[in-house]
Image 1: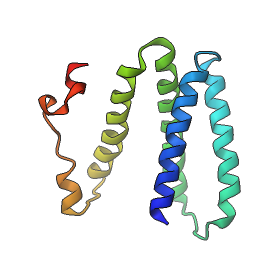
Image 2: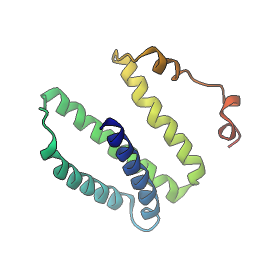
Image 3: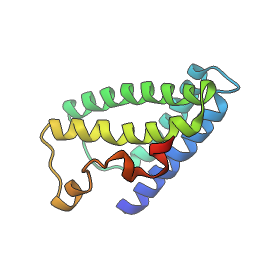
Length: 134
C-alpha cells in the first residue's frame, strides 16, 4: 500500500507542478495557489473517511506549519516559470525540496537505516552531470 500511495503522491506533485507553472503564465500566482489548495482540500475531504488514525495537537501544529511552508514553496515554484526558465528552476526546486526537510529532520533527531543515510551523502558538482554545466 505504501508504494501505491508514494506513486500517487509523486504523480499528484508532478501534475500540480506542471499545471501550476502553465497556469501562472495565464493567471496571477495567488489565484493558482488558491485553486490548488481548494483542490487539495477536496481530495483530503474525500480520503479522510478512510483514515482510521487519530490526531494529536502537536501533529496538527506541525501540519499547519508544513502547510504554510508548502503554500509559500508552491507560490515561489509557480511564479518561477512565469518569470524565468523552467530548466533552471526545476533542478533547484528538486534539490531544495529534498534537502530542506532532510536537514530539518536530522536536526530534530530523526535517524534512518544506514543504507538510507549513505545515500544522502552530498556529491561533488563534477559528479552531477549536466546539472553542473547549467
